[in-house]
Structures are given as structure tokens and as C-alpha cells.
Image 1 (cartoon, rainbow, N blue to C red):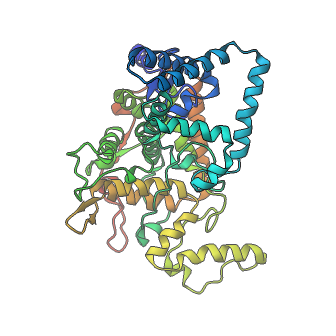
Image 2: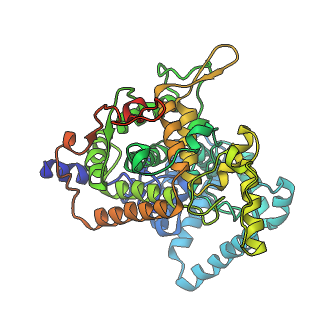
Image 3: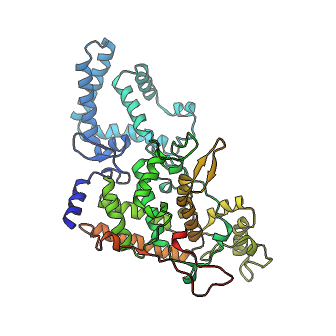
Length: 466
């Protein structure tokens, strides 16, 4: 078992981009065999030796294979080739001078939001030489630089980084494109009012960890964020009889977390060892993961579990509308500033169900709720001319999970996030992943049973009913 696992690890060493070490790789450098995820990584400074050689060879090939090219085209290509040769032969001092020009452009664009600036404003920031170089490139669509520009656009399309990696408080000025934050779904009030404790049903934190880890893998593997925003459902349904991004995402998720889609599943994970032992073989079967990438996905899960520093009531479950409207004074005996903060945040919940969705954005488990919301929208059925939404077994179970995590106190979330992070570090330090118990022994089936003493005819919620 361990030998085959080790071989699988060695055969999948190219799964993570060797340059940024964040994205799942899509390409391999023909010169050094380093895996990379996008053109920006291929052209990065740390990979400059290979990329410059590649462009030089492309120009030489262009000259040899196009004898019918006009004299002007051949002159331009020869000039570019000569420029490459001159740059290769320059001394370090001259290279430093050239870097000053690049640094000058980077400095001019350092405080510019390239997503919002107009083309005319951007044009004004370029020097005369830079403008002429750009115009010379687009005048001839068949030239080498123009083709490279088109290739870079094609590579960047679809290469969307996960939404949770973006810093929402700082506008991005980098070339990376981050996905938009998923839309929060509505959670029924009874689920938000459920107590968290020994009598509230089976603990689901480790099951949710599996969901988050699978979500991180699928997002990075497909390069789509959020998953429910991928091109899909053009026919008004979410059937998996097509090759859409959403259909692929649902297929991968069912393979990694089958207990979500199976209505009769009674799988309950009880430890991080159980999570690792169950997920590792499934990721290996996918053919796009290795130990390094698995560590990355677990770290994603840990980061998504980190509670927000400011929640509507720190360390306490979400309150229902009836509790907030009972007339009880909140924040009594506190300093005025803290009382105002609590009152402002709690006012989000003293509204309609639609407003409650916005209020959940202030929940301690906001990022986990956004993941579940994205998956709920991914698995919901949409049929008919009006594209009416209907719950599926998977979306219904995910809604239950959302209610569970929304009621979780922040200290418990923080502790569990730390546990997942610790397990990721341990995996990173290990030479290979030891799955321990056989696959079927890593989870505990929840046996259907009635509570010995029911109150008012209510029965204990069973995991297979979720």
C-alpha cells in the first residue's frame, strides 16, 4: 500500500506550479520541464532564462518557415532577434540599466488599478517608445509579438484564482484575476436557531472539512471561481449530460465527497486522520494531486474555517428573529462603543429572510458559509422556462451543514481551523502519506435510532436524513 502510494506521489510531482506554488499546473516548460500554471508565471523573473531562450527560438523558426514574408516583416524579426542576442551579451551593469526602465514602468503602474482605469488614462502613462512599440505590434497580427500577445490572452482566460485568496480590503493591482465572492444563500430560521452541543445531533466539523478540501481542489483544478458561476445550465437544468464546467465540478465533488449526494449515506468522520485516509486515495485517483497539493488544499480548508474577528455576537450562535425582537436589552452594562457595535451588527438579523442573507456575511463562519452557498447553488436543480430552483439531496444536505456551521461559536471554529492547519504541516513534514486504516474503517456510520426520550413528539435528527 505504501509503495504504490509513494510511486503515485513521484508520478504526480508536476501537479503544483513550480513558480508561484499556488495554482495547479497546466503546462510544462519545454526547456527545464518545470510545471507552470499561466503565462505570467512562465515569463516571471525567476524563469527568465528559459522564457527568453524560448522567444529567441520562436523568432528564428518564424524567419525560417516564412520565406514569403515581406522585407519589412523580416527586418522587424531580425531586429528583435538581434535585440535578444545583444541582451544575452551585455554585462551586468548594462542589464541593471535596462532593469531601471522596467522598474520605472512598474513604478508608474504601482498605484494604478488596471481593472478600472480607462484606456486613454493608461495610454497617457506610457512613454513614447512604449507607445510606438505597442502600435508596431498590433499593426501586424501575424508578427511574432502579436501572436505572443494573443497567446497570453488565451492563457489568461479561465485562469481565475480562488476568491478567498484575494484581499477584499486592498484593491488588486497585480495581473492575477480573482474570482468574485459567492452569493450567500438563505438559511431557514429553524436551522439557525439550533443549539450546538451533545444533544444537537452528530458532530459534523470533520465532514465539513472534507467538503472544504474537495472545494479547494476543484476550484484550483478547474481554474473557476466561484464554481456556480461557471458556464452552465444554458438549457435551464443542472443535468450532467454535457461537458460544462459546472457539470465537471459536480462530478468531481461526488467523487471526492460522495456522502453529500447520497441520500442514504450515514458517513461521519471523527478525526483528521479519518479525513486524510479517506480523501488521499480519492485525490490520487483523480490524477491531478500529489502530497504537496494535498497540503495546499488542507491549508485552504483551514483558512476558510478561520472565524472573522468581528461577528454579530462573538463566540455565540446566531439568534433567531424572535429572540432579537423580544425586547430584551442587548449590551446592557457594556461600554457605549461596544454596545453600539453589537446593536448595529445584530440589526442585520432583525429583518426579513432576504436581509438575513446579508447578515450572515458578518457571521464568524462567513467564508465557510460562502463555500457552502456556492456548492448549494451548484447542486440546485433549475428546470422549466422560468428556471425555477429546486433542492436536490446534495443541496438540502449542504443547507443543513450551513445552518450547523452558522451556529458554531467562534472559539470552536478557531480551534478546529488550527487542528486542520497542524495536520497539514504534519503531512508536509512526512516523507509520504500513510493512510493507516483501510478506507472503509476511517469513518463511523451513524446507526438510525430513536432517542430514548423524545419531547413533544420530536425525534433526534439523523445524519442520513440530512
